[in-house]
Image 1 (tube, each protein chain N blue to C red):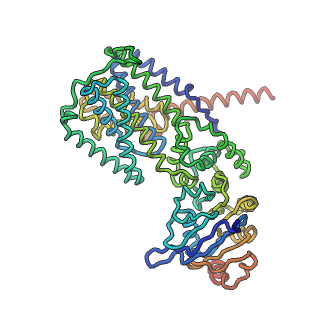
Image 2 (cartoon, chains in turn cyan, brown):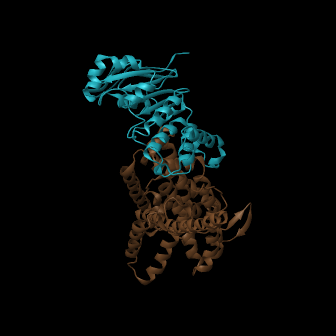
Image 3 (cartoon, each protein chain N blue to C red):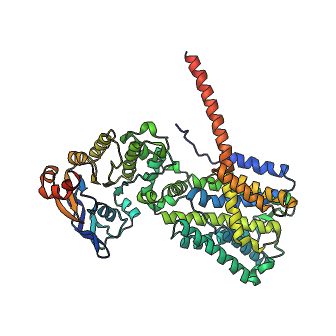
Amino acid sequence: MNDYILETDNLGLRYGAFAALGSVDLKIKRGSIHTVIGPNGAGKTTLFHCLTGERKPSSGHIQFAGQDVTHQAPHKRVAVGMSRSFQITSLFQNLSVRENLRLAAQGRDGLAALAFWYSDSHRREHLQKADEVIERIKLDKMANTYAGELSHGQQRVLEVGMALCSNPQMLLLDEPTSGMGVDDIPVMTQLISELGQDHTVMLIEHNMRLVMSISDRITVMHQGNILIEGEPEMVSGDERVKKAYLGESGS
Amino acid sequence: MMKQKKSSLFGGVTLAALATVIVMPMLLPSATLATEILIFAMAALACNLLLGYTGLLSFGQGIFFGGGAYVASICMINWNFGLLSALLTAMLTGALLAGLVGALSIRRTGIYFVMLTLSFSQMAYFIAYSLSDWTGGDNGLLDIPRPALTLLGFEISDLVSSQAFYAFVGTLFMVIFVFARRVIHSPFGTTLVAIRENENRASAVGFSTNHFKLLAFVISGGITGIAGALYAMLLNFAPLSNIELQMSESILIMTIIGGTGSLFGSILGAGSIVLLGDVLSAVWPRWMILLGVALIAVVLFMPSGLWGGVGSVADRWREYRRRKASAIKSQEVN
């Protein structure tokens, strides 16, 4: 079996003359936590959107678990084992935490969920999955609270939990700590590193401490291309990275 | 913490609906009026599946209502269709029309979706108007029979009296009500709510949202088609106004006034609008102005509709009871 769960080959996205993504060859190892960082406008989010299917790349291919998913619709990627979270919290605000997760688990059924003739409680496995994830993300006390009534930190955690419900092989997390307070960040760090034990995790993140402490590999992007890729120590010591990234925002 | 709602098909709201269906003819001056309320409650219920549960504001409901009325009537007049086969035809017509309108409209979202349904509605009206050989055009379709109810060759009722027809419509209404409850508590129905809440997320967790919206349209159209056919049987007449834009509006207004996202609300909405029309139109020919006032008041002061208003009073009552009970409990502990 191939060591890499996800491989992109010459992936690019052009808007007219402007290349949001130049030519990206990204390889993500099975079972690793792989972080993509880079200054604003480096193409991280564009890359992410190409991987989730929200944007159609103008060149190149995406291979996921041995399949070419380059032109697959976002909702179909869930069935092959890809699952994502959103940078801007995107929940079912007026539904309970449990129902949010149950629906996310039901999503894996795809068109089979069109069944309108039997009760939703018929499919026990979705409720079980929801309860399992609730425990995992430690929101048991909030199971019956509306998602919209959770604190921002809890919503961010639920956001990641939703992605977990489809039994994905790979989790794509778009800035999981975005907007989180300092107090909540350790919870998220802990959760992601735990998830890394049995999933492949790819994330985009700005919080350097989190990135350095949990990543197995880091890819630094700059102006639509990969600048450098390696282990955290190597990346944090690299001069080019300092110049492109830390120098710009860190000084 | 919120209470966990258990969805029982035949309890709770279904009982309330059944009680309403039974009591209504006793309270109202005529069974015909009660029948009209139930027919529009059916249409509002179907509209609610789209508006309340899926979040789709469709101006196409009149197409399915009028379409069902015309096709069932034409079949009864020209080919002697029986009662149930006429209703079945109306259902299929409504579903088919909704499938067509839906398939094209859901390709856009938001305001563009609404505009598309609006355009279809206008188009359907002019098609009905110009096919006057079939639809009677401006004069409407006259002398529509109300066939007897026969099952397996036995005549159960001739449905001539307005009470008998009410009983039939009431039974059918309850069947549809229970069906709609089943739909909204099914995997499909819960997914519709997910789409209403956040279509992006629904798609991200794996739902092909357009398929779900289309099926919602088809189910809604089927029910609305039945309602249209029943209305034609009630009046023995299918006016052109059945398929006018104003029919779509009326159905939408009933749904909104009753409360989106609650099936019982649709009965309240249809009931109040039909009654209001019946009472006020006798007093004042410009009663529609008052209807406008009522709609404005509900939208401003009861955003979840009449049923929502009832619900919040009930919630407060429950909260009050709970507090009282826990106060007694803590006294006992002390």
